[in-house]
Image (cartoon, rainbow, N blue to C red; front, top):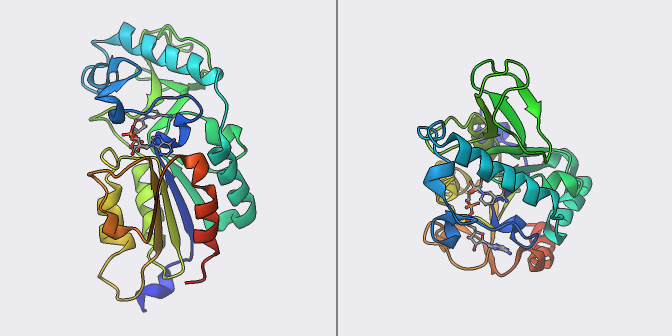
Length: 249
Ligand code: NAD
């Protein structure tokens, strides 16, 4: 069978921290390796989080409290509108751990780095919705001090990556489109995914179209891999996204 028969026409929206920055949640590496004045290594590392238990919970409690006080912005609402318009054809994938896409009305979001409002126990594997409340790190089921936020730490497992990669392959269809918003591209190496899958040379003339929105050029994202680029705020990229999606070929 010719490989194109197995591909489906899809639209992928792949977002990073830049999508939520106009809502008041700061980005990550972009601010000199600090995330809200914490060292990323201290609060996001699989091998050290237990050692930094109190600090890790303080940090994520502050993130939940902050999340409860911010609102989705126009770019989140735009993605909800696109989901209504395109239905199952649209796949929304985010690296963000906030819930602003859901609060804007997006029904299906693949959170590849987990969700801030969810927690689990590394001892008994109980999972629960923490909402925006503080946690003392104690599991409500087994009572052990072994609870953690359901977010992917550096060096930890990222079980949702397999679904993300499967989705990226669908974009190889010639009529598929991929929109990347607000990511430097160094945590999830989106450049290598686009280069080897979306813009693959394995199958001639079967390539999706790509759109990039960031504030400025990233050293981790080759401009050659994008058909359209908008450097500016995500809330100002909306018109460009509409005309990109309206293009026939
Ligand atoms: P990053 O901080 O490394 O890079 C942010 C990118 O967004 C930059 O390329 C910047 O140009 C762009 N940007 C900033 N403001 C923008 C705006 N208003 N409009 C458009 N683009 C804008 O982010 P990353 O690549 O997503 O990696 C950060 C990691 O940290 C992710 O894995 C994520 O899980 C985590 N994180 C999440 C949140 C969140 O959930 N909101 C916030 C910070 C970090």
